[in-house]
Length: 288
Image (cartoon, rainbow, N blue to C red):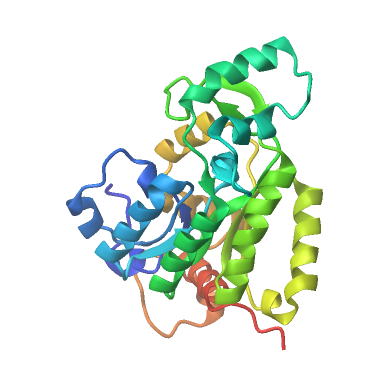
């Protein structure tokens, strides 16, 4: 920890995408010691309240982000299902004559799955959370065409089923969330993996549907091709400050070791430049 800059520099750093609630436990001391600003993403039903609690604990350091990630979109029912099995069978065994392997996998998976949550309930909770925090963003939401549904998402050695979440289902869940973000004027953290065409079509559709309201919203669009297990390893290896140092090295920017005021922009270091990017994103767009 000795390579960290002074607090006067750290307080200007923003981690624009992190999942702190993935940790099994976050102590009060850790929250109190938080020296940078973080955009805390939610992904599923279980962590919406956890992100809310983090934001309440450190409102000046935590920007809450509420939403449902595509990896968990299959937990959501677009229309009221006849039963749990009916919902998941429609998603994963749409063929009237599925293969024996798929049928066996489905029978093994079904007891491990939660009861589906109606999309209307998801949107009700999402609206409540976004309205409770005026600075909150929508995130993490998006599309992912290569994610395979695991038998147990939390298993250390995650075993995968042959099933992917149908893109039309992902789109229905995502577009409903984006509509709410536009209505409330909130920026969006958007995940897009192997979904370039679907993402572009969706963004064009949103522009057509919402016009200038859509153009006032900023998107943090990101994608990553590594496995969830690899990404968790990467997060364990790298701290936010290490990432800032890497960006500074790649860009050829100096790295602040103190925080003098009234510097010319040509003399700015990596932290000031990244902070300006964040503030521009946070304030939204002015298309006029």
